[in-house]
Image 1 (cartoon, rainbow, N blue to C red):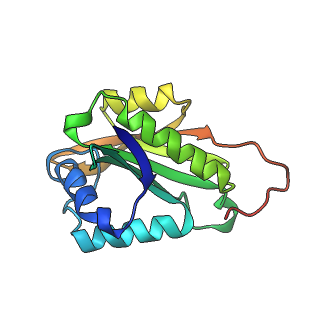
Image 2 (tube, rainbow, N blue to C red; image 1 turned 180 degrees about the horizontal axis):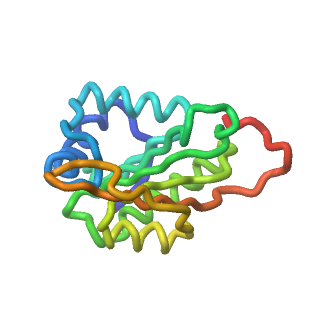
Image 3 (cartoon, one colour; image 1 turned 180 degrees about the vertical axis):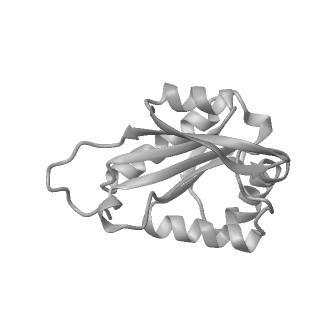
Length: 173
């Protein structure tokens, strides 16, 4: 049985293992070296302190994760966040990414965030379709912005609303 829950430092090894093949074998992420377990634990703690980091368990094994962080450091952006989701290859096409994102969006909305922004390295038909199906609208493409695996890659950016709040908005918590 699958369940989504808050991530903790105890999930760092599983998250690092899921992420490493994306780093070493694809241009989906522009990182060049996979983070260590300690680095992943720090990332989890940082995301949890301001936004959220969730994991999906299937039969007590972490099979994916989704997280959010600040979109930009300037104070006027504080109601917006950048989101990402990563799923183990064994769970591609199972709805795991959708499940994680929907839980993440609920959490972010409860915490007072209004807008989610996501970047997708092109081409990535599965991620492009997932984001479109979840209500992300295209907002622009950074053309040939990242060099990895011996070629230039573009990143398509999109956004979706998380919550409608009163103006002026309350501070996110």
